[in-house]
Image 1 (cartoon, helix red, strand yellow):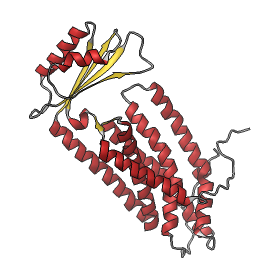
Image 2: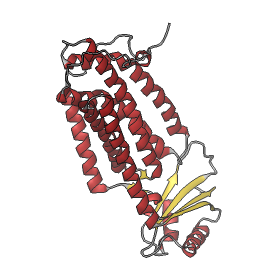
Image 3: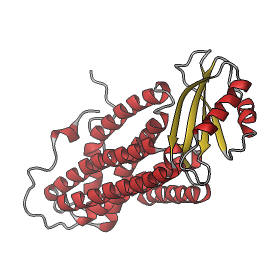
Image 4: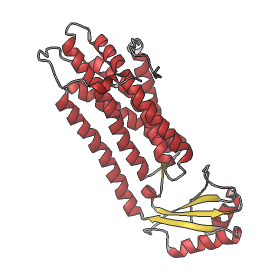
Length: 322
């Protein structure tokens, strides 16, 4: 007896409420844009420029004490956060002090860092300074530009690839689904004000690849069924194709989420932002492959004059039992 995530054969009507799903996606995208415009992103030192000091102490972290110790130094906006991790023992209390680069300076000077450490050592006698990381404003500006270019080029490459492999309607549906995933991921980081750094850019590029993989599997089955059922309406072809690949989609998504949730809970604060982005991306990527890319393809329509069978379309991986 085998455990299945979904029945062997399904016949869900994914297009019964297509306007509702597109409406939900539209509202979420608008909310993401509004949050980004009003709040912006909580850029990390990678993009903002400045210095991050990581401390440890046996004494419980008191944010007010830390802020009072460094507040008199006149360094402007200083962010102090306590780091929580299930692997930390009761005598390991970790804090992150982020100091933005001062005007006219490439980075926080060693003298300023020494002054911060001295002030903290006076307020918290057993404090230990584990690491100090600095990034200059010029470098951080270049990183932002490079990150944007990387994401745009990745989506552009996807557009060309899908267009060459399928038709322009497939390409546009896939790219809009990827843009949907990226926008919602940036939106959740803006809304929750989670630190946005280079690791999140890596997560965005990974999400693009993951979502594309799901979308291509569905589109491959759609192309195969368009040749197989020449008189079947496009809505029914799309619905049948999604049902036929649903077991594979669920198997991939659920097993990936199991690993990501384990990393999210036990992986520690260093990779938590990356793992959160990946977890959110897998969820919205699976959703967009079914409810966004296919809905857009239905709206655009596809030509039905393919007379030659495609021996390369469809494969055994679309029929994995889940």
